[in-house]
Image 1 (cartoon, one colour):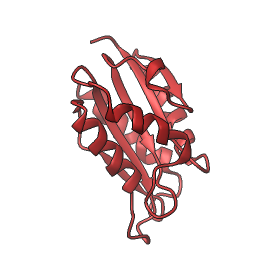
Image 2 (tube, helix red, strand yellow):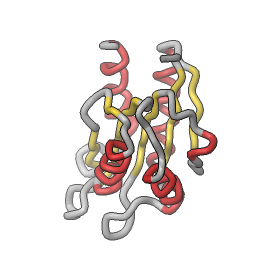
Image 3 (cartoon, one colour):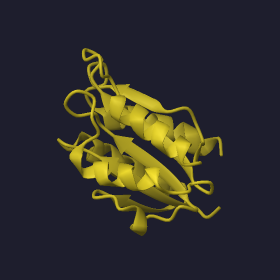
Length: 145
């Protein structure tokens, strides 16, 4: 497995993009090449690589608009060679807390991908700068591999 990461972003208001940028810095320091996909298209993302899916939740628990097409593409894909990390951003005052990340996790696992670590769900009520929480988590993950 090459040291390449595809960071797949689902974002409406930009917070997941900030997290993706921070994770890119962590991964590059660990020797990875990184491509961030702000308008993810499965045709442009290698399935035989490691993915970091970083998504918020929108509306009544839906995926953000920019990642919905990607989610539909993945449902038709074979991801047996894909290893992934999932980071969800959410607000625990809503009963749909981190549903976007939970949905993406379900979709990629059903397509055959494997998770390299338990998903990280960041509650923006407790962590108003979610990238700080994501960086600590990802540094620890990469240090263990």
